[in-house]
Image 1 (cartoon, one colour):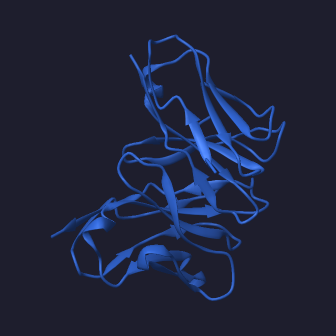
Image 2 (image 1 turned 180 degrees about the horizontal axis):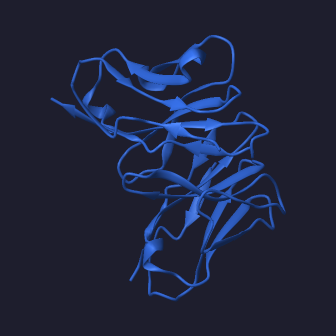
Image 3 (image 1 turned 90 degrees about the vertical axis):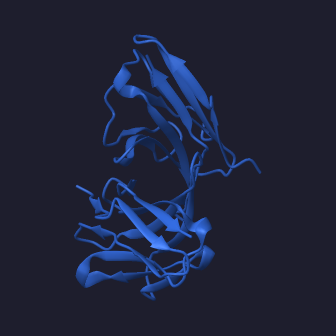
Length: 114
Length: 111
């Protein structure tokens, strides 16, 4: 069964500090990988995605993520966090041929201290 | 371009009542999904559809039914609402780029 793990439920960082949110998945094949962001009371917005090729992908709002096949990970990073980045972040995977559906992790709530 | 529209945005139901949530997308996407979001549990897939006339069960399908009679619409039904179905429901659609577009959510309370 598809499984996506986000081990950090809450993370607090200071504005201007760097950020890394962790995501691990458990499948035999390489899935399509995504990071979404959800602001309070809103739907989800795509930050970035990885399908194949360069394992470091750039997204919107200055975010990037690195796919590491050996670790089954797709961690999200940002060099300098802004107060407006406070939100909930979700990692998601899509496996073709494995039910063809989009599965989400449980999310990481990011708090930014000024 | 409206994207994905969910109706209603808020609803309060009494236990045992029924209701239908409507999701409409104008992007000609094949895939559509219904998720529920509960604190600490992320988004859990209820049902999904890979095209008009098709539906499939997700992770938590019990107590819900769906229909996809038209490509642009995906309906989620609760036949007999229970307090455990109090949640925020999100619909999403997905095209060939595999990017999912989400509606604004429906906040449902069952009392």
